[in-house]
Image (cartoon, rainbow, N blue to C red; front, top):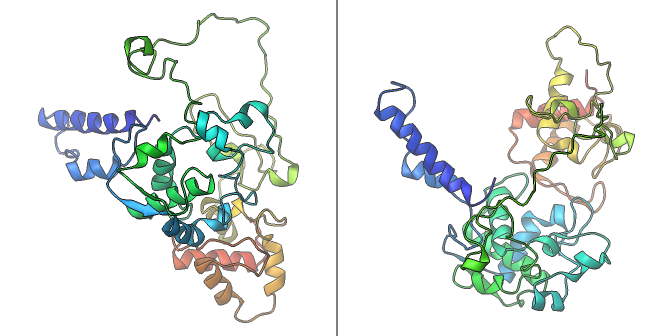
Length: 355
């Protein structure tokens, strides 16, 4: 959803609801959203920095917050390729001067980092504010977000090490973003008058000719995958993870017969397996194969025969840690209930069987 549209949609929905309640169309159903409730959803930051709350954070403060809450997935300098694609790397001082990242055209870097592609510093601020850290989104304080953005920009040499980012100088930083000129507004999705008339858009003119082809069409769509077979089930059955409407369907990775089976009450193992998938555990662990962290069968083997295994492992899941299985840390999972953690641990120690 466009960052421009969400606040308008929130206000429009509130207005529609208020009108329906006022004219008695739906008596006794719902109420008008309060201004405070609308503000709680309206947290986005636009490229022109409308919606940005006052605050500030230094590069040094950002480094401290980064090591505590971000480095486990992105590496100490945002360059790690262990869990996620690197955030930093591939930009030069010339890119900062021109606003165009040369490596995007030349293709002379191993892979594209986030700082190579992102055009606006507001995008960094907005995404970190809404979605990070992965295990506890929206838990960062306002000044923490400023500090984390400052730290990332320093790693890309956009700002110096003693820089303090704030709502007062963030527009100046925008003028140094390496790919600030890499985004076009000459398309129908960008509102406003065209540049020829002093605007920044093309007036909403569609950028397609809408000429139907309708020849040599495929009669059958075959769903394939570039993933190796052992990784296809890392996130559960993909066929069950799409909406029930529309043309898109995920590949059936359940490794079970497609024939429908009579419904049965889920077993304890099935419940725990679903909990592991729903909680994101399978993103880093396979049942019998290592993904980022160890396979669950490896964990069960290491803790076999230890009387306090369940208690120790549950504590590690909740608090996180590193060193036991290598250098990549496991982030804390404080969002999980204690009962759910114990259910997961018992399932892991029993061999992590799905049924």
